[in-house]
Image (cartoon, rainbow, N blue to C red; front, side, top):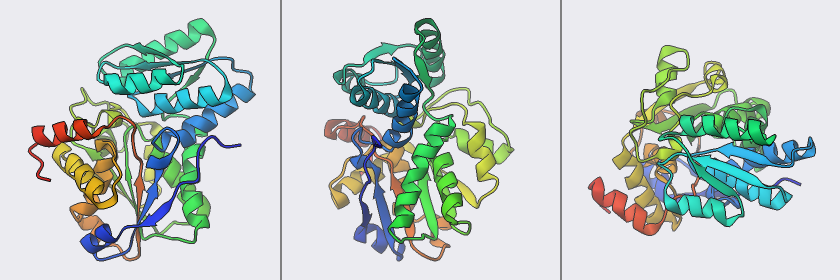
Length: 311
């Protein structure tokens, strides 16, 4: 039985009025771990345990680790999650609340992952990569299968991109259901735009550093698979500011009474700010509301004040 939920697919009147076309929201924020990560990490955890794993190890900026921790609790196996120093105390506490062990290593996800590899090797635990594995892509692809089963075929899918796991899954799912003519708008924040760099160069590019508050988008290098699939589909890269992402979070909370992280706000901002590539498509728009557990009202207010985002 899957560990993820079938999430609501909701029409958005405020966003429809913004872009003058139907906008549908796939509410991944309602997953047990508050983000889409439950799909891929849940499937990867299930398969690892079915193959004999008695311990799970993961590295994460927050959401993937929280999903693995939730999966480990459901599967009754111990979990260790390694996070970088940029992962705040609230997210560490959320992961720990499941019974998982939380370790902090490195200033960015890549360094935390190196430490997780050492733990997995020493302990014999199954290492679950947060975005670069076929099980994860297959799990994330289920989001598109659910939309297809509901009878919606959008003209454009808007999705946030970090390391590329969600985007790879979305593209895999779209190919499986035959959405070959549907455009994809892949959105990330400036300072964490590893996909944009790879998309422009035609090969994965390693960023020198991550300089964005959207730390859960903070992989310095995307997986090779996302670039391969993006080159086979109509994918447009879109880079937005931290202020635009936070502004979209604030507006989305007002419009839909749902709180999401700036990593999710990045995708929403492309709709709120009427991105040209979005405005030129025909047919409805599907936004993957990827969610994120690492946000509180006070944190959102702090970000908005620091970036001078008007309510």
